[in-house]
Structure formats: structure tokens, C-alpha cells
Length: 81
Image 1 (cartoon, helix red, strand yellow):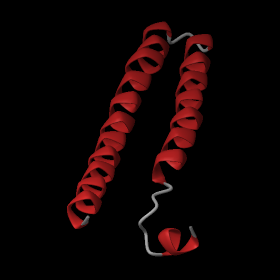
Image 2: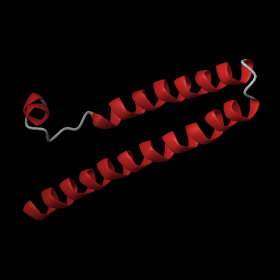
Image 3: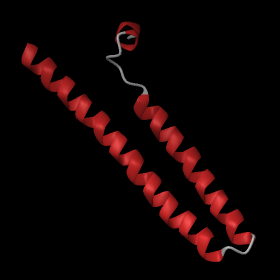
């Protein structure tokens, strides 16, 4: 287990990315809500909806890259057998 971790065969990025997604999404929503309360109705709504949507797409792209890596590692291991 530690050998895989230290040789970068085991990725911790997926768990970290999911945690980071939640933290930033909450931050975007709170920022949009504060903008709404300060009178920027359209700016607040755009920040909440579009900001969270863009952040979601960015995170999904990163997850896609990690999934491709995982699949390639699996293929490599199967070819070695």
C-alpha cells in the first residue's frame, strides 16, 4: 500500500478533488448569496448558477482525466499478465 502511494501508483487526487469541489461550490454559493443580499440580484444569480456550473464542468474534466489514467493503468496491468 505505502509502496504504491510513494511511487505515485495510487492517486489521492480523486478524493481531494471531490472534497475541493464541495468547498468551492459552497464558497461560490455563499458569494452569490451575499451579492444577492447587497442588491445585485442578477449578478448574484449568475454567480450562483453559472459559477457553480462552470466549476462543476472543470471538476468533471479533471475527474475524466483521472479516470482515463486509471483505465490506462488497468490496461497496462492486464497486458503484463
